[in-house]
Image 1 (cartoon, one colour):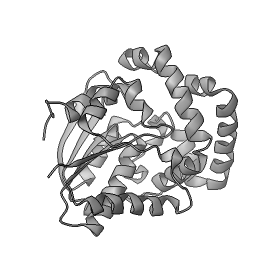
Image 2 (cartoon, rainbow, N blue to C red):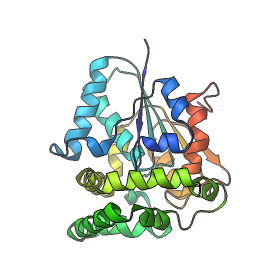
Image 3 (cartoon, rainbow, N blue to C red):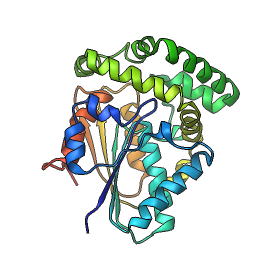
Image 4 (cartoon, one colour):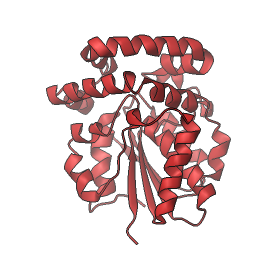
Length: 264
């Protein structure tokens, strides 16, 4: 049977991030499915959307490969957990790139570029909602400024990638979409993420590969280490020297989708 390959983007983000890292053609050739979560109906809430996604995949009755980048790795794991309930015999495997693991696994927030926002979401959800409303207003009139703030600390290969004008323009569009029409989804994703119970991951008995940049200050290496110790069937934890967040996505995705699948 031909399998399904599904990609879950980061937050803020969209499937356009694949094109921005130069992997758009590769993703299309591989038949990768990548929905823009900003366009989903927020009415069912986070768990409702996860259940709908898992049900749609289970209905196809074909093996599933889930690829999650950054906060999309959290979404991919949640979909896999729901799939295990809906279709326990369905083959499912995961590739998690620069993964956002449960905050409860360690003291990660001080080393995360988005740490203050995640801390606010965890400890003061109402204040978090107010801040993201403000971000949405800024994104509507000055998305480029927000992008500059996001990538202010980029260095090495990450700076070379995120400093390209075409990347900056695309990132500005993603930020505008995620914090504009997709703002409710954005808040739902983050609020669900900061509340994730790592004990649930003991039930994710599906093969997982983790891809992590050693210089990542968005999702730090210690988070990948902790996630690898928590998931029951981690086949590999591949560190990419000198790379950070998007540069890890750029390097890992061809190994996942191309003729060289990397460690298994």
